[in-house]
Length: 160
Image (cartoon, rainbow, N blue to C red; front, side):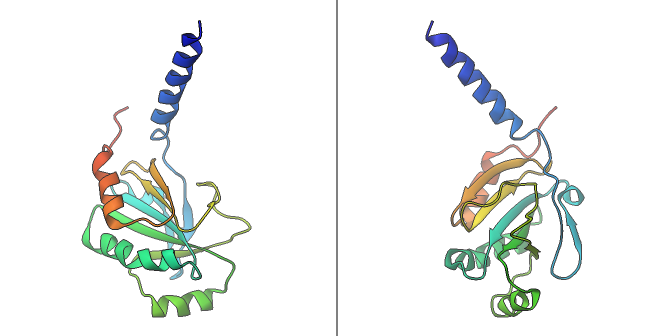
């Protein structure tokens, strides 16, 4: 009789894992350059959503790799979410010293986007598939190689 609850738990776990890919993430932000960014506008691309802050050493260290990934792969788009209570001017000054080509949006730490849980640590990175669904999350530093392995190990589309 003890095996039954374990089988049910395992089955529910597999169902929950498959649902991870089921629903597209609904994320809409305004980038520092005043442009609207919505996940739904980028169907067919992998989207790397990276929560970071100017005071976070590991965040700063991973920025060049994220920038290279964004520039060198047409199927990958990086969105940086600046998750700190600072002014847009201070953020722009920081980006002048640490330039990246990928889109950056400043996030209100008191009312962050509901698309993801509030980060428990920085950096936090979410990988969205070409269908907009959450494929993998990373808490802590991530490398380009980590993201490319995650992309390679996930199917590009989910058959429904």
